[in-house]
Image (cartoon, rainbow, N blue to C red; front, side, top):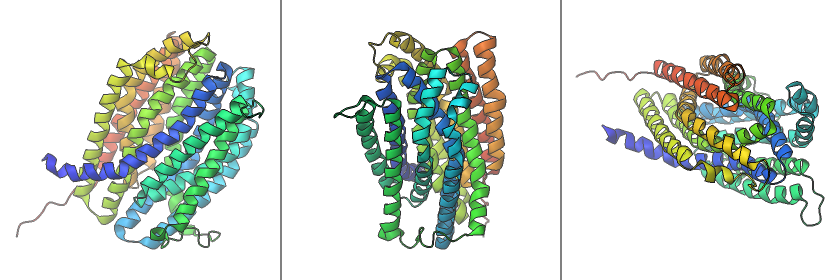
Length: 454
């Protein structure tokens, strides 16, 4: 029985490992900022943690259009419709560009709304310094998401990995020089981190666009040919599938950003510990996200080809693989928390002991939500392969905002559990999401037609 899942497991790994690597490398961009600023100052680390969370929330909302390209391209390939690939990718880029330009004014006035959310004046001011410079990077960041989705659906995942790895090196080098003022340059701190972030996003977008345009095996799609031409049908198709994906991502990232805000109400030390522990948990999550993306592509191709049995077998295989990795990470988080956390912090700083003490507790709670986080992102990826995004969006929003956030607030402040209560609410919200979304996928997945005798 297990033999039938082995080819699917091999296909998932072949497609998914480079995607996982690219997600980990993408996450490493934020990790390098955290590591550099953790050695620069606690206020700067807290500010960029908060500003980065705000940027990410708005990015995720707009990234739904780019993410929607992946199942659309996969299904089109399953049906053998090459022209539809070009149409969907081009309109995904249109929607991404429009959103990136429209959202920038929010970054320019970010100090006012950061202070309105209860952050200290110093953290809000530094956060605005970061967002004013990094904000224009929203456009290239969304272009990267759209092109990554296109190339992943085409099975071209290795180029995404190598370009993202190059971006990590560039971010570390530029960030180190500008944050600390090396080679005779001024010490720019938070502003230096923002310049490095913007530089890297522009580099990544240019490199992926050049590859998609010049690669001989992709020229048949000509995604940039007559780029200015409106394609109303494709635009509507990408919009309808993409906006619920964006809202779903907003609901989930908003859950964690809401936790960041509540941590800021407790103290800068609590916010810094939360930022580091969340980075560690997010690194593990990138593996589940990469497997989910690979499942979307393979299940989407099966959906386009009308292969119900193959679709269900791919889903079962991907769920088991994600579950297994989650179990391993639970052991790691519980066994060696201090060595992991110490990588992100200058342990000689006066506040380091408090950050590490709280961080160990938060990592233990992160172990609890590993499986819930894994299963909900896998279910979302599989639902997208079916072009089912609106009902999962509602389920996710209810799980995160009707269940998760209120639990975090009540446990953290009304029951006096503080940071532990806030993270316990995350566990509850993710568990609720994973259960409801898994039920949704298996109900909606097409069933194989029984073979008839004779």
